[in-house]
Image (cartoon, rainbow, N blue to C red; front, side, top):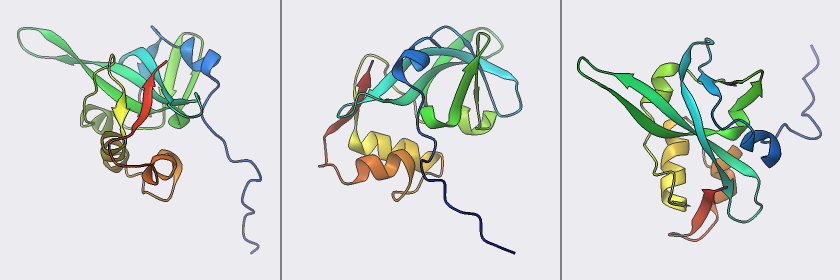
Length: 142
């Protein structure tokens, strides 16, 4: 059986105009269950391309609701018809490190988020930021 060829141009993140248009859309997990809403988008500090979709996840307790703001890899998201779907499971999203949507992310924080999602330093977003100097701002609010 022949080996599958590597795609010449791997799929990257959505364009900024597209991802920016997702703000306010429902955010669904891999099973298509709504887990929250798209709060904002973070872009790479060098290229300006979307790096993270910031999701406001709804956590319901006995007495009140509260939102957790987490970064979801933009490459793992697709949007249409007022919804954004991510290829990640609910548990992974709710276990993700929280972010402050008003502050940029440093290299170390991004690598921690990547590690949480199982993104090794040789692939995807982790590979893009791993070689940057420690303490560097690597992504910021769009």
